[in-house]
Length: 395
Image 1 (cartoon, rainbow, N blue to C red):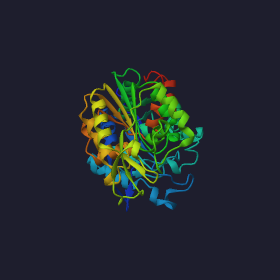
Image 2 (cartoon, helix red, strand yellow; image 1 turned 135 degrees about the vertical axis):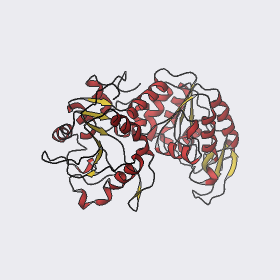
Image 3 (cartoon, rainbow, N blue to C red; image 1 turned 90 degrees about the vertical axis):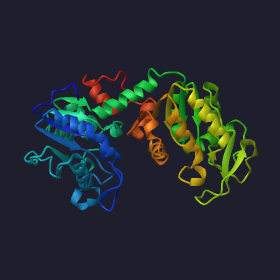
Image 4 (cartoon, rainbow, N blue to C red; image 1 turned 90 degrees about the horizontal axis):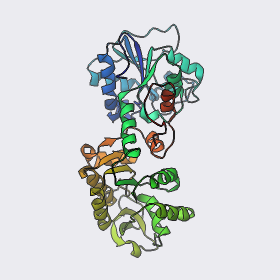
Protein backbone atom coordinates (compact mmCIF):
# COMPACT_ATOMS: atom_id res chain seq x y z
CA UNK A 1 0.00 0.00 0.00
CA UNK A 2 2.85 2.40 0.73
CA UNK A 3 3.89 2.12 -2.93
CA UNK A 4 0.49 3.20 -4.26
CA UNK A 5 -0.64 6.83 -4.67
CA UNK A 6 -3.90 7.05 -2.71
CA UNK A 7 -4.39 10.81 -3.04
CA UNK A 8 -7.94 11.60 -4.03
CA UNK A 9 -8.73 7.89 -4.47
CA UNK A 10 -11.59 5.82 -3.12
CA UNK A 11 -9.82 3.19 -1.00
CA UNK A 12 -11.51 -0.06 0.00
CA UNK A 13 -9.65 -2.02 2.69
CA UNK A 14 -10.46 -5.63 3.56
CA UNK A 15 -9.68 -6.11 7.24
CA UNK A 16 -10.28 -9.00 9.61
CA UNK A 17 -12.48 -7.42 12.28
CA UNK A 18 -14.08 -10.72 13.27
CA UNK A 19 -13.94 -10.15 17.03
CA UNK A 20 -15.74 -11.81 19.94
CA UNK A 21 -18.87 -10.06 21.20
CA UNK A 22 -20.91 -10.34 24.38
CA UNK A 23 -24.10 -8.41 25.09
CA UNK A 24 -23.52 -6.29 22.01
CA UNK A 25 -20.00 -5.25 23.11
CA UNK A 26 -16.55 -6.11 21.80
CA UNK A 27 -14.79 -8.22 24.45
CA UNK A 28 -11.41 -8.52 22.71
CA UNK A 29 -10.36 -5.74 20.34
CA UNK A 30 -6.89 -7.05 19.41
CA UNK A 31 -7.85 -7.53 15.74
CA UNK A 32 -9.33 -4.04 15.58
CA UNK A 33 -6.16 -2.58 17.09
CA UNK A 34 -4.04 -4.55 14.62
CA UNK A 35 -5.89 -2.84 11.76
CA UNK A 36 -5.39 0.70 13.07
CA UNK A 37 -1.93 1.35 11.55
CA UNK A 38 -3.24 0.49 8.10
CA UNK A 39 -6.28 2.72 8.49
CA UNK A 40 -4.19 5.63 9.77
CA UNK A 41 -1.61 5.21 7.01
CA UNK A 42 -4.36 5.26 4.39
CA UNK A 43 -5.86 8.43 5.90
CA UNK A 44 -2.46 10.12 5.93
CA UNK A 45 -2.26 9.64 2.16
CA UNK A 46 -5.24 12.02 1.69
CA UNK A 47 -7.67 9.68 -0.08
CA UNK A 48 -11.12 10.78 -1.17
CA UNK A 49 -12.69 8.08 0.98
CA UNK A 50 -11.68 5.08 3.10
CA UNK A 51 -14.11 2.15 3.31
CA UNK A 52 -13.57 -0.92 5.43
CA UNK A 53 -14.82 -4.42 4.62
CA UNK A 54 -14.99 -7.29 7.10
CA UNK A 55 -16.93 -10.35 8.11
CA UNK A 56 -18.22 -11.25 11.56
CA UNK A 57 -19.10 -14.78 12.58
CA UNK A 58 -21.12 -17.08 10.36
CA UNK A 59 -24.42 -15.44 9.47
CA UNK A 60 -26.81 -16.96 6.93
CA UNK A 61 -25.77 -15.77 3.51
CA UNK A 62 -28.50 -13.93 1.63
CA UNK A 63 -30.46 -13.04 4.77
CA UNK A 64 -30.58 -9.34 5.66
CA UNK A 65 -28.63 -8.25 8.69
CA UNK A 66 -31.85 -6.80 10.12
CA UNK A 67 -33.10 -10.37 10.44
CA UNK A 68 -29.92 -11.59 12.15
CA UNK A 69 -28.75 -8.55 14.13
CA UNK A 70 -26.35 -10.53 16.28
CA UNK A 71 -24.00 -10.57 13.30
CA UNK A 72 -23.99 -6.83 12.75
CA UNK A 73 -20.68 -4.98 12.80
CA UNK A 74 -22.28 -2.15 14.80
CA UNK A 75 -20.24 -2.94 17.97
CA UNK A 76 -17.09 -2.96 15.86
CA UNK A 77 -17.96 0.44 14.38
CA UNK A 78 -18.44 1.79 17.89
CA UNK A 79 -15.08 0.44 19.05
CA UNK A 80 -13.34 1.73 15.94
CA UNK A 81 -14.82 5.16 16.56
CA UNK A 82 -13.48 5.16 20.12
CA UNK A 83 -10.00 4.05 19.07
CA UNK A 84 -9.70 6.45 16.13
CA UNK A 85 -11.20 9.40 17.97
CA UNK A 86 -13.88 10.20 15.39
CA UNK A 87 -17.16 8.68 14.26
CA UNK A 88 -16.99 5.67 11.94
CA UNK A 89 -20.48 5.19 10.50
CA UNK A 90 -21.73 1.70 9.66
CA UNK A 91 -23.24 1.36 6.19
CA UNK A 92 -25.76 -1.41 5.55
CA UNK A 93 -26.79 -0.56 1.98
CA UNK A 94 -23.60 -0.23 -0.05
CA UNK A 95 -23.99 -2.65 -2.98
CA UNK A 96 -26.78 -0.77 -4.72
CA UNK A 97 -25.31 1.36 -7.50
CA UNK A 98 -27.57 4.21 -6.41
CA UNK A 99 -26.52 3.98 -2.75
CA UNK A 100 -24.99 7.11 -1.26
CA UNK A 101 -22.22 6.56 1.25
CA UNK A 102 -21.99 8.98 4.17
CA UNK A 103 -19.53 11.86 4.13
CA UNK A 104 -17.01 10.51 6.63
CA UNK A 105 -13.26 10.04 6.85
CA UNK A 106 -13.78 6.30 7.35
CA UNK A 107 -16.90 4.19 7.03
CA UNK A 108 -17.41 0.52 7.85
CA UNK A 109 -19.46 -1.57 5.44
CA UNK A 110 -21.78 -4.14 6.99
CA UNK A 111 -20.85 -7.82 7.35
CA UNK A 112 -19.82 -9.15 3.93
CA UNK A 113 -20.96 -12.66 4.77
CA UNK A 114 -24.62 -11.73 4.49
CA UNK A 115 -24.05 -10.88 0.81
CA UNK A 116 -25.24 -13.60 -1.56
CA UNK A 117 -22.27 -15.15 -3.33
CA UNK A 118 -19.59 -14.04 -0.84
CA UNK A 119 -18.32 -17.48 0.16
CA UNK A 120 -18.44 -18.80 -3.42
CA UNK A 121 -16.35 -15.85 -4.66
CA UNK A 122 -19.17 -14.91 -7.03
CA UNK A 123 -17.72 -12.72 -9.76
CA UNK A 124 -20.80 -10.50 -9.98
CA UNK A 125 -20.56 -9.70 -6.27
CA UNK A 126 -16.80 -9.13 -6.53
CA UNK A 127 -17.45 -6.63 -9.35
CA UNK A 128 -19.89 -4.74 -7.10
CA UNK A 129 -17.20 -4.49 -4.42
CA UNK A 130 -14.68 -3.39 -7.05
CA UNK A 131 -17.05 -0.68 -8.31
CA UNK A 132 -16.88 0.99 -4.89
CA UNK A 133 -13.19 1.83 -5.17
CA UNK A 134 -10.22 2.99 -7.16
CA UNK A 135 -7.80 1.01 -4.99
CA UNK A 136 -8.47 -2.23 -3.13
CA UNK A 137 -6.20 -3.01 -0.18
CA UNK A 138 -6.08 -6.61 1.02
CA UNK A 139 -5.00 -6.42 4.66
CA UNK A 140 -6.87 -9.35 6.24
CA UNK A 141 -4.32 -12.12 6.55
CA UNK A 142 -6.78 -14.08 8.67
CA UNK A 143 -9.01 -14.53 5.60
CA UNK A 144 -6.27 -14.80 2.97
CA UNK A 145 -6.78 -18.59 2.80
CA UNK A 146 -10.39 -18.12 1.74
CA UNK A 147 -11.23 -17.66 -1.94
CA UNK A 148 -14.18 -15.32 -1.41
CA UNK A 149 -15.66 -12.33 -3.19
CA UNK A 150 -14.29 -9.83 -0.65
CA UNK A 151 -10.78 -11.31 -0.67
CA UNK A 152 -9.42 -12.88 -3.86
CA UNK A 153 -12.45 -11.92 -5.96
CA UNK A 154 -12.24 -8.14 -5.59
CA UNK A 155 -8.43 -8.31 -5.64
CA UNK A 156 -8.64 -9.65 -9.19
CA UNK A 157 -11.25 -7.14 -10.41
CA UNK A 158 -10.55 -3.81 -8.68
CA UNK A 159 -8.94 -1.07 -10.80
CA UNK A 160 -5.86 -1.36 -8.59
CA UNK A 161 -5.07 -3.81 -5.79
CA UNK A 162 -2.28 -4.06 -3.26
CA UNK A 163 -1.33 -5.58 0.09
CA UNK A 164 -1.83 -3.62 3.28
CA UNK A 165 0.85 -3.27 5.97
CA UNK A 166 -0.64 -5.97 8.19
CA UNK A 167 -0.76 -8.53 5.37
CA UNK A 168 2.72 -7.52 4.22
CA UNK A 169 4.03 -7.96 7.75
CA UNK A 170 2.58 -11.47 7.94
CA UNK A 171 4.14 -12.41 4.61
CA UNK A 172 7.51 -11.04 5.67
CA UNK A 173 7.46 -12.80 9.05
CA UNK A 174 6.44 -16.19 7.65
CA UNK A 175 8.92 -15.80 4.82
CA UNK A 176 11.72 -14.98 7.27
CA UNK A 177 10.94 -18.07 9.32
CA UNK A 178 10.49 -20.48 6.43
CA UNK A 179 12.47 -19.37 3.39
CA UNK A 180 15.76 -18.21 4.89
CA UNK A 181 15.62 -19.07 8.59
CA UNK A 182 18.47 -18.47 10.95
CA UNK A 183 19.60 -21.94 12.06
CA UNK A 184 19.02 -24.01 14.05
CA UNK A 185 15.27 -23.95 13.46
CA UNK A 186 12.88 -25.36 16.04
CA UNK A 187 9.26 -26.10 15.14
CA UNK A 188 6.77 -26.62 17.95
CA UNK A 189 3.45 -28.30 17.18
CA UNK A 190 0.90 -29.00 19.89
CA UNK A 191 -2.76 -29.84 19.84
CA UNK A 192 -5.17 -32.70 20.11
CA UNK A 193 -4.57 -34.87 17.07
CA UNK A 194 -1.80 -35.72 14.62
CA UNK A 195 -4.44 -36.08 11.90
CA UNK A 196 -5.51 -32.45 12.32
CA UNK A 197 -1.98 -31.19 11.74
CA UNK A 198 -0.50 -33.94 9.61
CA UNK A 199 0.43 -31.71 6.64
CA UNK A 200 1.90 -29.15 9.04
CA UNK A 201 4.02 -31.83 10.71
CA UNK A 202 5.17 -33.20 7.37
CA UNK A 203 6.11 -29.78 6.01
CA UNK A 204 7.93 -28.71 9.16
CA UNK A 205 9.75 -32.04 9.49
CA UNK A 206 11.46 -31.26 6.19
CA UNK A 207 12.32 -27.71 7.24
CA UNK A 208 13.20 -27.85 10.94
CA UNK A 209 16.31 -29.09 12.69
CA UNK A 210 14.22 -30.06 15.72
CA UNK A 211 10.50 -30.65 16.17
CA UNK A 212 8.80 -30.48 19.57
CA UNK A 213 5.35 -32.02 19.90
CA UNK A 214 2.84 -31.47 22.68
CA UNK A 215 -0.70 -32.24 23.76
CA UNK A 216 -2.49 -35.23 22.32
CA UNK A 217 -0.09 -35.15 19.37
CA UNK A 218 2.79 -36.01 21.71
CA UNK A 219 0.85 -39.01 23.04
CA UNK A 220 0.77 -40.62 19.62
CA UNK A 221 4.53 -40.16 19.29
CA UNK A 222 5.09 -41.56 22.79
CA UNK A 223 3.07 -44.64 21.86
CA UNK A 224 5.04 -44.97 18.62
CA UNK A 225 8.25 -44.93 20.68
CA UNK A 226 6.97 -47.75 22.88
CA UNK A 227 5.84 -45.78 25.92
CA UNK A 228 2.51 -46.38 27.71
CA UNK A 229 -0.10 -43.62 27.43
CA UNK A 230 -2.94 -45.12 29.51
CA UNK A 231 -6.32 -43.67 28.54
CA UNK A 232 -4.77 -40.56 26.99
CA UNK A 233 -5.96 -39.12 23.71
CA UNK A 234 -3.90 -40.67 20.90
CA UNK A 235 -4.29 -42.03 17.36
CA UNK A 236 -3.06 -45.60 17.12
CA UNK A 237 -3.69 -45.66 13.38
CA UNK A 238 -0.99 -43.01 12.89
CA UNK A 239 1.79 -44.76 14.81
CA UNK A 240 3.61 -45.64 11.58
CA UNK A 241 3.30 -42.02 10.43
CA UNK A 242 4.78 -40.84 13.71
CA UNK A 243 7.70 -43.22 13.29
CA UNK A 244 8.28 -41.95 9.74
CA UNK A 245 8.41 -38.38 11.04
CA UNK A 246 10.81 -39.34 13.84
CA UNK A 247 13.10 -40.84 11.19
CA UNK A 248 13.10 -37.53 9.27
CA UNK A 249 13.80 -35.03 12.04
CA UNK A 250 14.91 -34.92 15.66
CA UNK A 251 11.76 -35.08 17.83
CA UNK A 252 12.68 -34.88 21.54
CA UNK A 253 9.86 -36.66 23.34
CA UNK A 254 8.71 -35.93 26.91
CA UNK A 255 10.56 -37.78 29.64
CA UNK A 256 7.99 -36.95 32.32
CA UNK A 257 4.33 -35.91 32.24
CA UNK A 258 1.50 -34.64 34.40
CA UNK A 259 -1.35 -37.12 34.58
CA UNK A 260 -4.82 -37.27 36.11
CA UNK A 261 -7.59 -39.79 36.50
CA UNK A 262 -10.16 -37.59 34.79
CA UNK A 263 -10.29 -34.79 32.24
CA UNK A 264 -11.45 -32.06 34.59
CA UNK A 265 -10.41 -28.61 35.75
CA UNK A 266 -10.68 -29.95 39.31
CA UNK A 267 -8.48 -33.00 38.73
CA UNK A 268 -5.27 -33.30 40.72
CA UNK A 269 -2.04 -33.50 38.76
CA UNK A 270 0.54 -36.20 39.43
CA UNK A 271 3.99 -36.11 37.87
CA UNK A 272 5.22 -39.40 36.44
CA UNK A 273 8.08 -40.61 34.26
CA UNK A 274 6.72 -41.59 30.86
CA UNK A 275 7.61 -45.24 31.56
CA UNK A 276 5.42 -45.17 34.67
CA UNK A 277 2.16 -43.97 33.12
CA UNK A 278 -0.60 -46.27 34.33
CA UNK A 279 -3.43 -47.87 32.44
CA UNK A 280 -6.03 -45.45 33.86
CA UNK A 281 -3.91 -42.31 33.53
CA UNK A 282 -4.68 -39.37 31.26
CA UNK A 283 -1.61 -37.40 30.14
CA UNK A 284 -2.64 -33.72 30.29
CA UNK A 285 0.69 -31.86 30.32
CA UNK A 286 4.44 -32.31 30.13
CA UNK A 287 6.41 -32.62 33.37
CA UNK A 288 9.01 -30.25 34.85
CA UNK A 289 12.08 -32.16 33.60
CA UNK A 290 10.70 -32.13 30.07
CA UNK A 291 9.91 -28.41 30.39
CA UNK A 292 13.48 -27.73 31.53
CA UNK A 293 14.91 -29.70 28.60
CA UNK A 294 12.66 -27.83 26.18
CA UNK A 295 13.82 -24.49 27.61
CA UNK A 296 17.47 -25.49 27.16
CA UNK A 297 16.78 -26.43 23.53
CA UNK A 298 14.89 -23.19 22.86
CA UNK A 299 17.78 -21.10 24.23
CA UNK A 300 20.10 -22.53 21.52
CA UNK A 301 17.83 -21.87 18.54
CA UNK A 302 18.06 -19.24 15.81
CA UNK A 303 14.44 -19.48 14.64
CA UNK A 304 11.31 -20.81 16.37
CA UNK A 305 7.93 -21.54 14.75
CA UNK A 306 5.25 -22.24 17.36
CA UNK A 307 1.73 -23.57 16.94
CA UNK A 308 -0.11 -25.31 19.75
CA UNK A 309 0.18 -25.88 23.53
CA UNK A 310 2.03 -28.54 25.49
CA UNK A 311 -1.05 -29.56 27.47
CA UNK A 312 -4.49 -28.55 28.69
CA UNK A 313 -3.31 -25.08 29.73
CA UNK A 314 -6.89 -23.93 30.34
CA UNK A 315 -6.83 -26.08 33.51
CA UNK A 316 -4.52 -24.48 36.12
CA UNK A 317 -3.10 -27.83 37.25
CA UNK A 318 -1.96 -28.56 33.70
CA UNK A 319 -0.79 -25.13 32.54
CA UNK A 320 2.82 -25.28 33.71
CA UNK A 321 4.22 -26.96 30.61
CA UNK A 322 2.76 -24.41 28.20
CA UNK A 323 3.66 -21.53 30.51
CA UNK A 324 7.26 -22.69 30.70
CA UNK A 325 7.38 -22.99 26.92
CA UNK A 326 5.92 -19.51 26.39
CA UNK A 327 8.37 -17.91 28.81
CA UNK A 328 11.35 -19.73 27.29
CA UNK A 329 10.41 -18.53 23.82
CA UNK A 330 9.89 -14.98 25.09
CA UNK A 331 13.36 -15.01 26.69
CA UNK A 332 15.06 -16.56 23.66
CA UNK A 333 17.19 -14.39 21.31
CA UNK A 334 15.79 -16.38 18.36
CA UNK A 335 13.39 -14.97 15.79
CA UNK A 336 10.08 -16.43 17.00
CA UNK A 337 6.91 -16.74 14.97
CA UNK A 338 3.72 -17.85 16.73
CA UNK A 339 0.22 -18.39 15.40
CA UNK A 340 -3.06 -20.18 15.92
CA UNK A 341 -5.91 -19.49 18.31
CA UNK A 342 -4.72 -21.63 21.23
CA UNK A 343 -1.17 -20.36 20.85
CA UNK A 344 -2.19 -16.71 20.91
CA UNK A 345 -4.46 -17.40 23.91
CA UNK A 346 -1.55 -19.00 25.77
CA UNK A 347 0.75 -16.08 24.95
CA UNK A 348 -1.82 -13.66 26.33
CA UNK A 349 -2.55 -15.83 29.39
CA UNK A 350 1.10 -16.00 30.38
CA UNK A 351 2.04 -12.42 29.45
CA UNK A 352 4.66 -13.46 26.90
CA UNK A 353 3.64 -11.25 23.96
CA UNK A 354 6.44 -8.71 24.34
CA UNK A 355 9.11 -11.40 23.91
CA UNK A 356 7.67 -13.09 20.81
CA UNK A 357 9.07 -11.61 17.60
CA UNK A 358 5.86 -11.93 15.58
CA UNK A 359 2.39 -13.10 16.59
CA UNK A 360 0.27 -13.92 13.57
CA UNK A 361 -3.25 -12.51 13.33
CA UNK A 362 -4.34 -15.52 11.29
CA UNK A 363 -5.53 -18.87 12.59
CA UNK A 364 -6.33 -21.09 9.64
CA UNK A 365 -4.36 -18.85 7.28
CA UNK A 366 -1.26 -19.15 9.45
CA UNK A 367 -1.55 -22.94 9.56
CA UNK A 368 -2.07 -23.24 5.82
CA UNK A 369 0.84 -20.92 5.04
CA UNK A 370 3.22 -22.77 7.36
CA UNK A 371 2.16 -26.17 6.03
CA UNK A 372 2.92 -24.99 2.51
CA UNK A 373 -0.52 -24.27 1.04
CA UNK A 374 -1.11 -21.43 -1.41
CA UNK A 375 -3.30 -18.62 -0.07
CA UNK A 376 -5.87 -17.49 -2.68
CA UNK A 377 -5.91 -13.78 -1.77
CA UNK A 378 -2.13 -13.55 -1.92
CA UNK A 379 -2.09 -15.50 -5.17
CA UNK A 380 -4.63 -13.04 -6.63
CA UNK A 381 -2.43 -10.06 -5.79
CA UNK A 382 0.67 -11.84 -7.03
CA UNK A 383 -1.10 -12.70 -10.26
CA UNK A 384 -1.62 -9.01 -10.93
CA UNK A 385 2.02 -8.30 -10.21
CA UNK A 386 1.02 -6.02 -7.35
CA UNK A 387 2.60 -7.85 -4.46
CA UNK A 388 6.15 -9.13 -4.11
CA UNK A 389 6.00 -12.27 -1.99
CA UNK A 390 8.23 -14.68 -3.82
CA UNK A 391 6.34 -17.97 -4.06
CA UNK A 392 2.68 -17.43 -3.25
CA UNK A 393 2.68 -20.52 -1.05
CA UNK A 394 5.35 -18.84 1.15
CA UNK A 395 7.54 -21.95 1.20
